[in-house]
Amino acid sequence: MRVPVDGGDLAVEVHEGDTAPVLAIHGVSGSRKLWNWVAAHNFTLVTPDLRGRGDSHELTGATIKQHADDMVRVLDALQLDKATVTGMSMGGYVGVDLAVRYPDRVRALVLVDGGLPMAAHAQLTEEMLTAVLAPQLAARQRTWTVDEYLAVHATLNPLTDVTDPRTREYYAHDLTPDGHLRLSAETLAADTRDVVFGQSRWQELTVPTWFVHAEWSTGPDSAPAYTVEQAAAFAAELDALHEPVLINEVDHGGTVMTTAGAAVTAEVLAEALK
Image 1 (tube, rainbow, N blue to C red):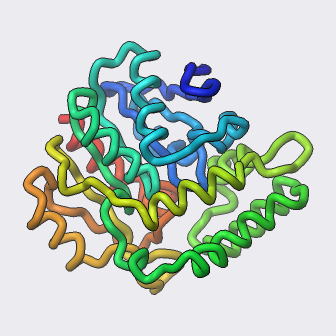
Image 2: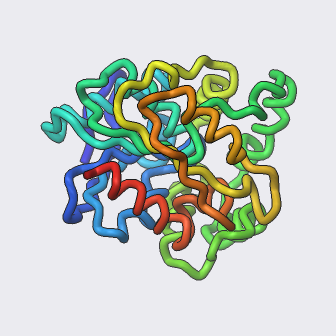
């Protein structure tokens, strides 16, 4: 479906399941197809393509705050006064902003390896961030077949199961019919800077909140985005935050894009829905 928002409209997919609706928000370079692994657990998921991605790639003007405002419009369009919300990576930061500014619309919040301050962000400078973004921006300058694009990401994400049809569907959704990336350079850069250099309002959360995090960041034995000690410190500081849940032997993307990771995330989401 298409949902009217400021400046245009947003593409939204609804996965019908046997739960109350869950608004699921993807990460900075992802799309709504990120949630296919979780949807397999029979959740009713509302999954938008955020501005600048997928079927919403022509819609610009992104900030974390704007994404959160867009999510309110999605809830309105589906006549949902309140919903459980989950966000992965940057989607977690959007979920935090949504829950802080619109607490009456969020009954519970599940953050998946995002939404809380990452220690690594404090070490980044503008120059370093530009270098980090360079490969993704360069990828927009050429055309891809799905197989070529999938092969590159399989190398970058060694835990990805390229034989899983959901993996192919996820990466195919990034491409136009003629092989260009459906990812706005302007939006990618703006959102990344907002996450890295912006101020998360996580300490203002009042809705019941769960935090799921990965053992690794990119591939086996890589340093995680959040350590166990950091996650515990967040829970000690924030009354609304339940005991964090560590997913062993998965990396950042694997929290939702692997069978094992999605199963743990689904368990936590089921708990939040109660």
